Length: 196
Image (cartoon, rainbow, N blue to C red; front, side):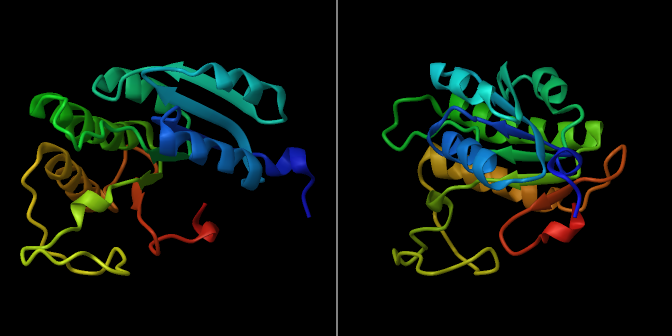
């Protein structure tokens, strides 16, 4: 077995790494990914809690940036092996404009996908929302489904519409060839650790 210094070879980028989900993903990676060499945390608003993470064996790099700015996303992604895209504007109360929601959730996801292609980042993990799958056209909730379960949701509000559009972009980009060596978009059940 290789020693821990040799095993630490992967660079992860977490977009929205200071958000509710992103922070949990960041902490989980630091605790459970033994091959992690560098963890890049990309967010519009960086939290003071990030400083405590910089004292461990993994290089933690904080990057203040905006997913709606393609050049910022591409710069942060250069050299990353895996991107976990948790950045998004959650708005179920109608406080943000539909245009802003679309810009962050749809255009931001387009920027992440394009940056994967441009930089040769092979793995993209996209986090969607339960809002995408339900309720369906009959008003029934979604129970115990997975990424292969068909659903006929009706989206009447900007947030679920934007997340559904972004999810579709990711699914369409799955397997798309990158400049080098290829972009593989991931969702649960589509990937195994042997591919890294």
